[in-house]
Length: 146
Image 1 (cartoon, rainbow, N blue to C red):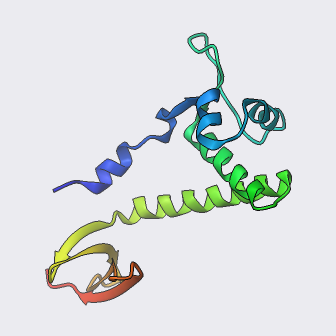
Image 2: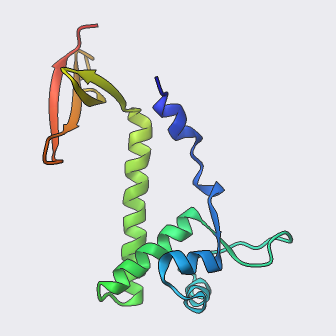
């Protein structure tokens, strides 16, 4: 069985770095525009003696993707940056929550359920989630029988 919590803890987004040309190609934002956004403080890159070009970490890559998305949705640059930052904060909060509750997968009645943890302070009930046939989330509270 896969230890999902150990896997999630092993993921380090700081290990994912991209050169400016790669970010440009993956996002559709020109290197010139990326340098401008960096000059304005919207995104940040790093340089070292080993790397001749700018490199962006995962967070900055995602910021670029989101800024571009909001710009393409007819937002001003300032508004797009604000929305991108809010979006990223929401994603980080959800990620931290999921790490904390350490959801696991269980099989019950031929279905895969997500064990979302104890539902009450007495630890006598658990909350499970699953996707129905249309892909919509469904929840179920079950009595703990352990």
